[in-house]
Length: 152
Image 1 (tube, one colour):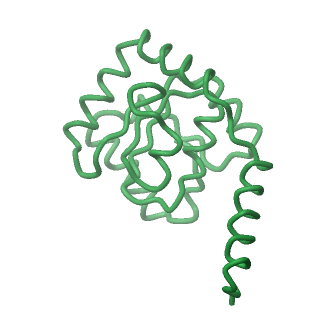
Image 2 (cartoon, rainbow, N blue to C red; image 1 turned 135 degrees about the vertical axis):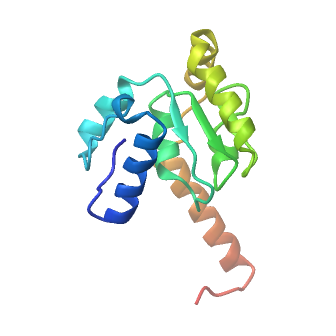
């Protein structure tokens, strides 16, 4: 688990308590806040990225996991459908379907071949860089201006 526990001490305590009650405390490493290089090194050593968020406007950390070549399990929120190809680079679950989320998590944890197939799927997909994102943004701005609409 990576994150600054000082930002929301109550949330950090609640997560640790949930882990303790579930008997998982010895299976979770609480890294705390880490810099980008340390996060990249951890991701490089992982087999799977699990993203249980039920609301995200975009999900930058999800994009980072995909760019790092990690198979993903996530809810269908934010840009998840644009970042993860269900069944090809990871598994996406309908928000609130915790049985489905658990089923896919168990399958991904035990099936190394499936994780490897998802990694291959990620390698086959081009990573969308900042140049492409800026070009899309510029095109959208130019289209707005061409239609005589002035941004305010």
